[in-house]
Image (cartoon, rainbow, N blue to C red; front, side):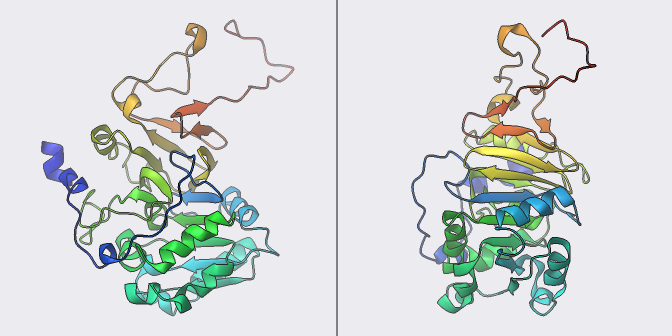
Length: 313
């Protein structure tokens, strides 16, 4: 009950009435995946991406290559100042080499619900959500034509990417979405854009000592998968396969892991180094996770010629 009082977890069943929620629901097609998109890719970044080569090169690749990519940068999270500042466009152009990039900004849910506003998204191969406050994106885009257009980018095989607030908004349950500040874990905005279904996403994880913050919400809501991303680190999600890209670590929060029901031994009784006895576990660059079966994907290990054979092999 103490957790419920501090975080407002009861808000899971009591949604704040906002203009966004008054919109007609978007059309979500049935699919075979449990969490990830049926088509296209998600690139979810934990903040302060800078010029991290592994992340940006992946974004360029997924958007169709620097000569073919057509990217829309959504700046709603940054507030009014982003409407006139070209710096986000210039930075991404300089880092990626992509030339066809345009800014899409609004502070009005009515504008986001117009055909004129979503026109640039109709031809986009990639969308990038910049950081700021995730509740602003929800306020202006949730259940609008813009929201539908984002999903259509995925359906065409494109990529939806975002950093910091642009990462959290991609989950279905919106974390740190209170208008009074990110210190309130569950606040007056609890619905994300849901690109990653049945999920809750946090960012700046290790840099801001947030690694334990997602434990209780996943423990109390077993259908959710929790994803915590450190800075300059991302997850690439294609269908139900998640792969870590970047410089640091990603934490996975699953109900079975938190409650100790996950198997902590590999087949044959050998120790599984990728499973934790704690409430979460970390994955690093190149490691993969099966979101559908909630298990780490252990790829065959290649041994160098000089490496001795382990007694456990």
